[in-house]
Structure formats: C-alpha cells, structure tokens
Length: 100
Image 1 (tube, rainbow, N blue to C red):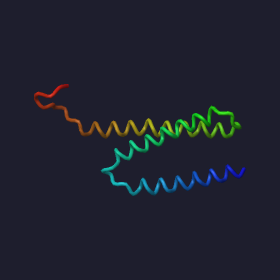
Image 2: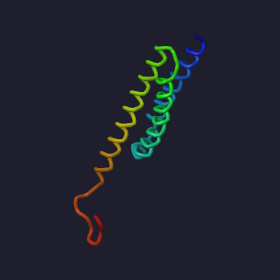
Image 3: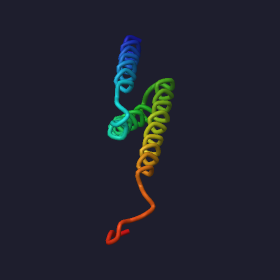
Image 4: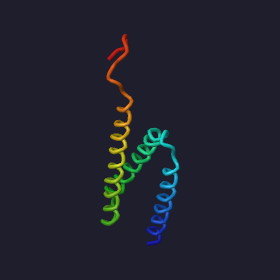
C-alpha cells in the first residue's frame, strides 16, 4: 500500500509540473514540443504494455490498460495534429524544375 501512495504522489506531482511547463511554451514551438511529447508517450506506451500484460493484480493491470489507451490516444492525436499543421504550409503550386 505504501508503494501505491508514493506512485500516486509522483504521478500527481509530474502531472502538475507537466501542465505548468506546457502552458508556458510559445506557439512557435508547438511542433517541436509535440514531437518530444510523442516520444515520451511512446515510452509510456511500452511501460503500460509491460504493466497491462504482466503478472500483476487485476486492478493494476486495469490501470496499465487505461494508461495504454491514454498514451496511444496522445500519440495518434499528436501525429494527426502535427500533420494537419504541416499541411497548412503546403502550397498547391510547385516551382518549375522541382520534382514531385
């Protein structure tokens, strides 16, 4: 039970620090920041797969499955948002002599 409260404390503290850092980021740095958070979420995906598929009590495995769902949602939506932002900078015309 002590491990649970310690892990919950670390999770809440990391969440508050993460929200504080993200709110102070300039809009110009959104795409590089999104790629970094996608990398961090990919690490969380691997960890949650290990927890969800491990030999743990059912409630811990359920939390692992929830973490897997949330991390994958973050990764997929991050890629979709980044792709949409990059499409805003594409033009329909190509300069002469450029390859398709």
